[in-house]
Length: 343
Ligand code: SER
Image (tube, rainbow, N blue to C red; front, side):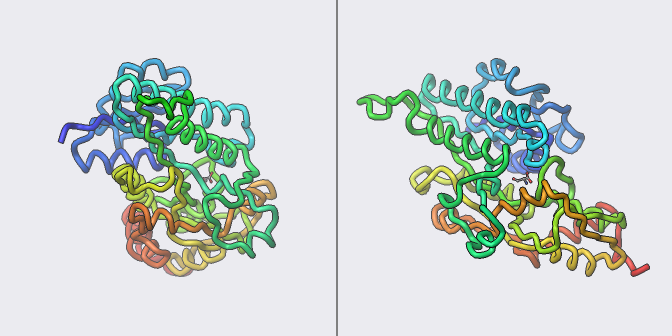
């Protein structure tokens, strides 16, 4: 099979590093990366070219590239976006818009549909209050699309932009000879947890932060209440999910935006599991009202039945396997923390 040309934006982020490694391990991909930062050592040798700088100003450069697939991962996450709203809008919306225009142009001009794979988020949901959040439990894609955050608004709008450019761009879809459109596909990720990297700027960050701190023997003050519940997923499952969605035959897709999830867990359950693995861990709860409000607006869980039915999505790691077979073994190797004894 001919080599496929791929662009990964936000390559230095958590998903970006893991995805670059996974694609490189698969062979058959020519990987170009883009990010504000220089590439970290973990992926430097895997990218044939790295474009460093603000995507919005660098986009012209990409018009000369023949990308088959664009993974648009660059984003300002929910907590950071809330304190720098205008910047978040530029990064999250303008950047996406520029890439969609590029993919739409190339798809039409070369009559070859460019795939744009987009990680959306549970932040597109907005539960009005805790009582409703608890009562509703799992939400379907079309329910509660009333985000409370700048990041959630940006992601929801970009989903719609992606659908627009794939189906209706220029309103020529009914022409006798319609143009070739780009192929936009999105998943709404829950909180992601990697054993190798820690997130920054997000609000689900308390999960991974708590676990990494416990493994390093550092005290951790969790910024949300103990009863705070949302869904999470292991990073290897997130990567599996992006690759499955990329490979899924178009005729199997009944929609362009899918929920995906692995397990739903409270912050208190994270603490209990962290303490079982690292009995010396010092974890306290000191809720930050603003960040608490963000997570309270996200659903407890999402219904990912459509992803399971249409393209066979299924996580490898439920909550037990996540801890026992992924996170704890890997984190112990990383920080060299064998079982810690209580102090
Ligand atoms: N993990 C993201 C955040 O917390 C949500 O998609 O911002």
